[in-house]
Image 1 (cartoon, rainbow, N blue to C red):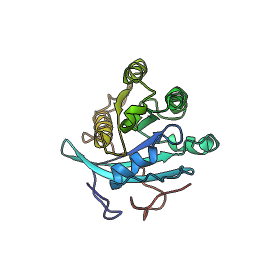
Image 2: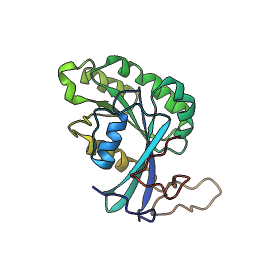
Image 3: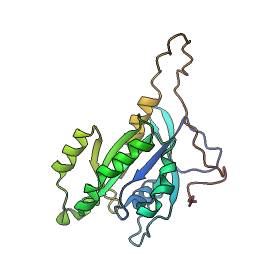
Length: 217
């Protein structure tokens, strides 16, 4: 696992990805499993927003992901909406064992599209696949929703690590393909696109903040 060793870590691209969905669906554990390979059954609900980072390799480039875990509680929604700004990717998470969390995905998707960039890459994530014996959301139902809304889809388990690496690798690679694609010049202007793509600078306000520390707003 790549880990941040200093604030001067070298990387080719820096992308902000937000985790959204109802409280209790496992967003915080997806974050900690991917960035620290940790899982905590006693995880408390996120208050406000936390973030962590990790770098991966994709197609010979070092991509640093700054992943934001937004609180799912209603009373924090006004706070977290500001954190959609600058995000180039989003994981829309629900709990496969609680159909109500899947039902609310549509509301979260609407909020995301109202607040985030229209070109944001979105992946639907059915978490807690280890609870298949308690499943309330059929895989086919989630696939149908994702296809209808043009989203990628995958089921994961932060508990047993199933597909956690794949989720982040897939969304970051898709973002990389989009962000590194040269944009056509605007009419009457020269093409000044950087052939190496664009680095999205989303460094936290406190440059000393590392992956091992969380930002609670």
